Length: 437
Image 1 (tube, rainbow, N blue to C red):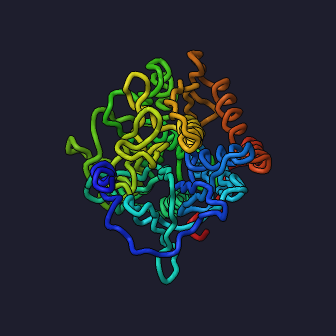
Image 2 (image 1 turned 30 degrees about the vertical axis):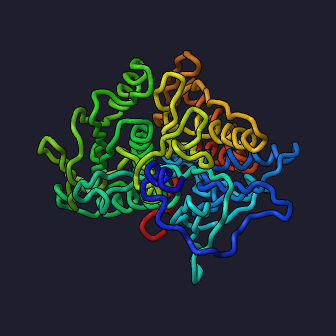
């Protein structure tokens, strides 16, 4: 079994561990379920199990994550743009799943032979957690494809720290640019490049535009036409996940504000003062935001886990995978897209299927049709398709905010985010996240 599993999960199984104390087993010998990952998918697994336990299921669930917060990632671009406070889009995992045992730490190894998860918590030695069933929901990390300078110099947008760092960087460059007299240096300081034409790229370039132009009133030495914004995309249209008409609308709206698009070309290298493209042209800039690739982290050796339709990892009867780190086939055999709406429902189905297996029943296939797609375009505009109905402009913007506000975990977070949005309508963007913050 361990050999077959190792063939599927490359890099997960390293060696059979020596016997040590196992965390998580209950006195009544309930089935031990370990969930690795505290994002949308992992939290959904834990929350579903809490409901199943309330109905009599005999499971003991431990959720392991290297972060103590469930981060509402669709709003990260607004945090970077200064429209939202960072702490308002994160909810403690303990509060999201209050009846689930939570362990914070980094999973460094999974041993399928002895069915243990090795957890690094910062103590003198690693801990071990035994499992009967394991759910992997570790999400993805940026993939830089070995391009020179990208990993070292590009900004990413995966965490609250990423968003805060990008915002502080942009405001710091405005301070420098206002005092700079060399036009070539000013051009580099005020040039902002985003790589990737998907949702993250389009939303990020729109929010950066709104941030810069929202605070220019405080920088009288910088004219409105000096800052430049460029989106680089290897495809030939942005938002390929959306209908072509909505992608065209998004491009037109962004171009009308002065955002420049470079299609059919990739970033090849990032130097200190320029972004080099594969066609051997360059964009003078000190800022590149990278949204052009993702991959699972080192625990999975950068490879997505292949599962069957019931979310069980191929070749492993007691290991399941959900969310962005998994390659889950739909009824036609096409992998489901890596979105939050899929991860949440996959998490619930994984819990149901584990409970079914424990009760001696066959697991059921995961089947879900996406409700819709939405993209925020800044300047109170958005594009959306919900069950075939296409919306754009202010109506889509209200829809985007209404849907995501409703999905935030907890009434407190909804009130805080709503307050931020109201303040953003009335007051200019805050400057306190500058270089000295």
